[in-house]
Image: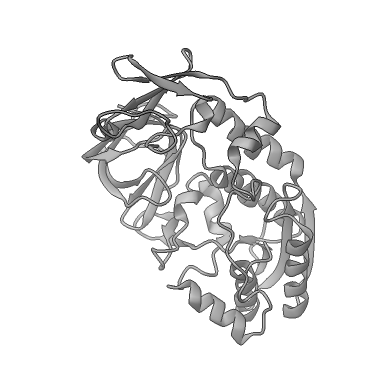
Length: 355
């Protein structure tokens, strides 16, 4: 497609995407707002959401469309969520949603509508790097709000087509103030913190109601195999969990692993949560086509974790081994490991296991 200034902006009806629309319009872009219908009754897909987004677009003076991608959302996000828990993994569904929906199907829709760019209200940054000779994904200026972690799995070829209008803003209150100054009615609308398709936060009930995953009693054992108690289903537990184990012991115990075949939750002392190595698969490299040599990077092993120094080595087309400089607590299969060089996202992958 020939380059133009037309941009398709994903709009949730929240303050971030609303201010993004305003900033893009004021910068001179030809903006088209779109709301994706993903899951009926979710926190991001309801009548209030649609009306907020539509009203903002009318106020700013840009067109607004709603497109139904419920089938695609179920196939690529919900099914992955269920499969992960069925295999004793703890997923982050936002990452799959960004890959397949917001920067997958939405980009295809952008091309249909003649838009060269797609945009969202994420706190992240894209720019062309002379050093690396390609477009790169970077952390936003606001490290507190930075969302580059959940964007590691997008296509590297798409980066030059992405605009993040909030990239240079340091504080969420700045965004709310812009909304207030421009009389946007969503200025004080609360942020959505939960998994959008589980607005009540009860993922256990969701799994039981939407899959074959059901309560199944099994043993809680320590690393020596000694039975310490009973559990109600592997999906009710995650690595690092202490509360709700229902067992008493001479020292505090934490979930350190699972044996799916034996239907066992494995617990241990806190020291057993710390590991220096892990294996990552389903990798997606944004900065390089492949890693020919070991490289030192910063690694985030969950959205809220601080970056940790590590050496990474690509061992196959789909796998990377990670060696941390210092032991890391609670490395969790199913979560994403995201690799950074300074503030640039090198890439990432799904954690398979700690070693």
